[in-house]
Each structure stands twice: as structure tokens, then as C-alpha cells.
Length: 232
Image (cartoon, rainbow, N blue to C red; front, side, top):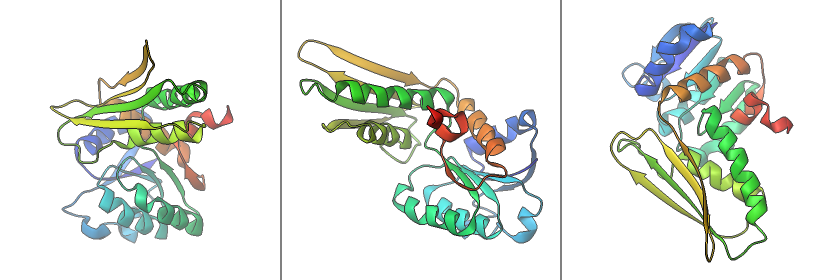
């Protein structure tokens, strides 16, 4: 299986490092120096590429995805911060028939955590005396805030019937790879669910799993699809 890497920062390099253990051969590495405005995504570059993984920037994703779609290349998107353009990107996928797995977080634990947050939302919805919050901590270099995962947690709670306010807070400090907490506080008690990432390799492994899964598929998918959680 031949893999195209788009974005060659920390995550791109981790995916590259782990790719052989997932039976991928890296067919190309595109970054700002050779893919400004998507110019590196050419017919020659994507020839015989089975799937691409994008860990670039939010602005770059909305250029890269349509260009890959023109060439019929399926894609895994790990970049966050482009939710405002999601509807347009979904239309590109529908019109061209490619397959895309887009996720705010590729960690298995985080995706199970999202399912827990959904269940908690349903349980606490009838109890107005409890207030809810989401707090996330990431490294100082992370640009988007709140994180894509924090927004996904909020969306999942609302989608599962939570109608009360959810206070959202972000911290950017040091080299923290990522901690997310969903909590509820009542008159005399507090309940908190926390997921902490110890190693960024979990995101790279999840992206490679998604890349294997999306080959030959058509449509817009999430890690819930990859992990079979939507069958629940």
C-alpha cells in the first residue's frame, strides 16, 4: 500500500516512522516547501498512491482535499480548525466519490471517551442542578482553541440531548500532548471524566488504521465508523 504524507511536522514524521509496521510504503512527503497552495498534488505525484494522510494546517486542508479528490485519492484528515468549511468539503467528497475519514482525534481512547461523554449527557440532562464544563490542555504551539476534540465532546453531548450550557476552557502550555476533561458540578458533589494522552504516537497509529480502513470506500466517515462504534 502506497501512502502520501501531507504536512511533515511532528505528526507527519510520526506517521512516517510507523508506516512500515502498517504495511505502508511512503510514496511522497509534501509540506509547505513543495506543496504551497496545493501545487505539489499533481497527477505524477499521486500516481499509484492508495491513500493520503493530511496533518498540515486548517487553511491547507481546504485546498488539499479538493485537489486529491480531482485525482480520486482517498484521504485521512487529522488537521483541525477547519470546521467552518466542512460542509463544502463534504460536497466535494459527494461529488467526486472519494472516501474521507476526518477526525478531531484519532486516539482509540478518545473515541471511546466521546461515547462516554454522550452517555453522561443523557444521564445528566434531567438534572438542572448540575452544571457541565469541558476543559482541555495542549502544548503551547497548538494554534486552535478550543481543540477539535473539545468541540467534538461538546457536539456529542448536545447531539445526545444535553440542552444546558457547557462552559468551555482551553489552556496552552509547555509540551502537553493533550488532556481533556468533561465534568459536572452539583450543589454538593463533582463528577469528572478525564482522558490524558501520554504519547502522540497514539494519533499516528489511529491515522494509519484509518488509512487502511478507508481504502476502497466512498463517502465521509469518522473514527466511529473505523472502530465500528456507529453499529452500537
